[in-house]
Length: 319
Image (cartoon, rainbow, N blue to C red):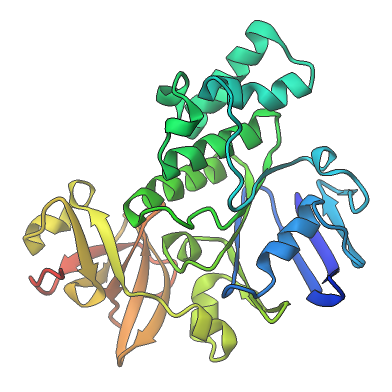
């Protein structure tokens, strides 16, 4: 497994903030640690990345026990909440930092930095000043810098905090693109949004413990603390230029679509139904659009894994 934590316990200021936490993420998988503020998510990530030493347990990266290793020697690309970009002359210089630290210099370092900038979608920012970037741009540059040294495992702590919802979609798309390129990604967040519902596994934390884990749609279907924390918003904001059914609904631009406006029907190809949950007496399907999800009324003949088409059932636009 690229990332494993086994029976991690973390004590800070004489208080146990993480207890018996174990998780594992496989190659090319996206895993989300979900929990309210204070649940222990950041402390667990800091133990995995080496920023705090666990009082008990082991951390294994790519099959190697790195529990005692320094953060820079763990094979992890790390972006922590609130970590500012350094005051380098340009974004390109910032992305080159880990390469220079590894002894890669000159044209080779610039070429590698430009390549990772292209992968992360920040090539148009290379000659900007880091301090001039928006919140979403800074986050993408931070991810590019974290990966520039060659790490194939990415750890993100609260990457969507203080970022406008409309710019979160860009980060969702980037994270899914990296997953598609084989990166293993571990994200801690308290924000319940598209990324959570399209992850491979959600690890739900509460009171310093992992109280449940599994595919998001299976957690939704099981009563208990996980389904309470994971309750779906059931409204998604989408770019109508990329969703043909918008025209039939009379929507343009970016629009908010409630589950009651759409019905998911079986199809031979197209998006897949990730899962089904009950909400207000309706059977609601969670539809994967590739980095974005929609919710739709789900007839009894469609089940998780089925290809579906989206059919309009209402013409009401939510403000």
